[in-house]
Length: 88
Image 1 (cartoon, rainbow, N blue to C red):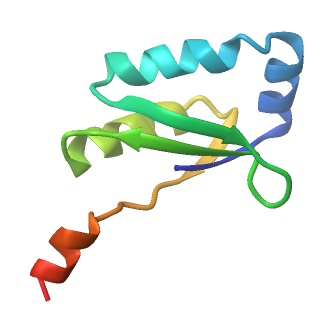
Image 2 (spheres, rainbow, N blue to C red):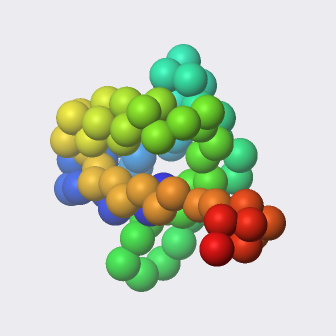
């Protein structure tokens, strides 16, 4: 998941950096797991590797987080290479 903070999101992180870990716990409550996370410079503010059991769960995570107005999200579903090749 690629994340771009809104001005409100930037203020939230600046005033409460621990909010990042709180959101990660909320993602877990929605049925997914944050496996890795990086702050990035450029077009996106964060790159998050999130594991979910299915696209429905990931959609729920994306919609819930996006509804808050503090960030915009772009999900990139990933297929393991062996599964990708087997499906060709």
